Length: 299
Ligand code: B12
Image 1 (cartoon, rainbow, N blue to C red):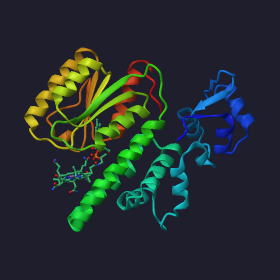
Image 2: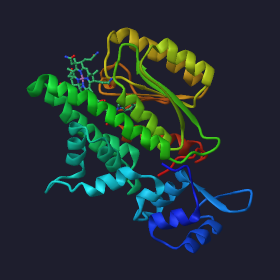
Image 3: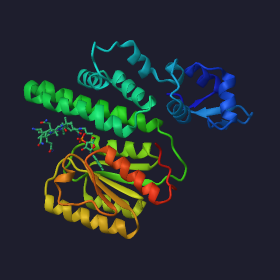
Image 4: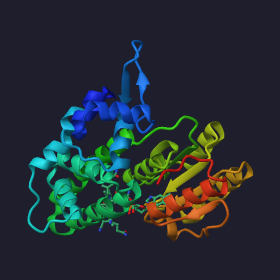
């Protein structure tokens, strides 16, 4: 993907005239920087923010370096295939460019990251998780490869969501002994799409490590994604003590993941125990409105 575009390149990509882009830039609809010689330049994150917000059609995705979308367009969907079926098939078959292109298109057409993760991505992984029952080693191979492809899809979204200076910060991971990569990465991606600067410590992060990271980084929000619980009593105790430290300085904790709600924890005040990325999104939007809308939370 290109990092910086000229007005002509963005114009070509969305099939409008260069003078329209320059006019929109001068009206503040597209944010530009200037070269030393005074020429307008558009960071690609800003260009894609504009494409998404205005639902502009990407007629030449190649100009932006989004070759995945071109690859996807060349692949005809099987008759009656929904976007969800398509993603499942691409992940199962190792069609990485197509999977990335599809997820990117869903986002650029206005889908939120939370909707994409709770919907097509989770459904595809649920279906892949059933395959090892019938397909044994082949099913496990598909599951591992699909996990890697989902990581690529999510990291690609992380590379294009707009960045705001002075964004609130979030930090999180999955607890010690929990090997699941995607849920925590998905939470980081959702938070970044909502205007946070997120640090993902990933799977198998002991709560003591998470707590030390929080003391050092002082994030506004902490997430914990729980897919495997080894010692529930101990994990609950560690989460309560983390929550105490966080609440003392006005930060919030969100616990989720497929086993998050099996823990003896109840949502209250600065703790949310949620089952979906939609709940994470709603909680974050609630936080922003209780701070009088000062946090840069996007639609
Ligand atoms: C990929 C995968 C693995 C991979 C993980 C690779 C990796 N490093 O990440 C590996 C190979 C490690 C694995 C291993 C095992 N797995 Co497995 N795995 C899966 C699979 C297919 C996908 C999981 C995934 O990433 N989903 C995508 C994420 C995004 O979805 P999610 O976790 O549900 O998250 C959603 C919500 O929980 C929520 N959420 C998540 N995090 C957060 C955080 C916050 C803050 C909030 C608010 C919300 C939230 O939002 C998300 C989107 O809606 C699932 C299938 C399934 N149905 O979950 C099986 C599955 C979980 N695995 C299963 C099994 C049996 C195993 C093994 C025991 C297999 C074995 N015999 O070895 C081992 C156990 C591992 C262990 N150490 O405990 C079973 C569990 C059955 C059960 N309930 O006990 C499942 C359900 C498959 C099945 N249908 O049988 N697995």
